Amino acid sequence: MLGENLSLEFYKHDARNLPFIYEFDLVYIMCEGGFCLMETDDMNFQILASAAKALKPGGLFIFTALNALYPLYHSVKDLMDDNINSGNTENHSFDLMTFRESSIFNIEDDLGNKKTINCNERYYVPSEITWLLQTLNFKKIEIFGAKLGAFSRNDSLSPDNYEMLVISQK
Image (cartoon, rainbow, N blue to C red; front, top):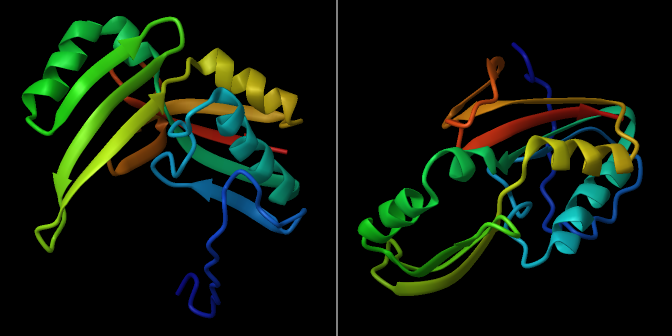
């Protein structure tokens, strides 16, 4: 069976400053996993640079990013209204100059504790992702549509995809 003798170790680090240098064949960032969620574009770039540094030559970097084509193609107003109507966000805004969405998210955890989270999310257009990865010396860069729970190279990116799947190789 695949992975039968696989040994895994888990670490907790700041994704902007990973302590690994050329150690991995694959770096995988799940569901943004920090990327797109940082307060500045520089912090987001630090995550990409840190992942690139951790990869061995020829290694793969797979991650998802918020697709700026989605709010551009669909009405930004409708996107905002959908989030407001969900009943758990407030002070929701989208800045078309920076592709940043911000809001205050209110949630109750499994124990009934109420939490308030200040959200700041950055959407990217495919050409930005390509340029950022080329800057980090990635040679092969592919961008696909990402469907919730069903990531595949068979899905072309479209404005209907909320997220994009990025597969790149050093």
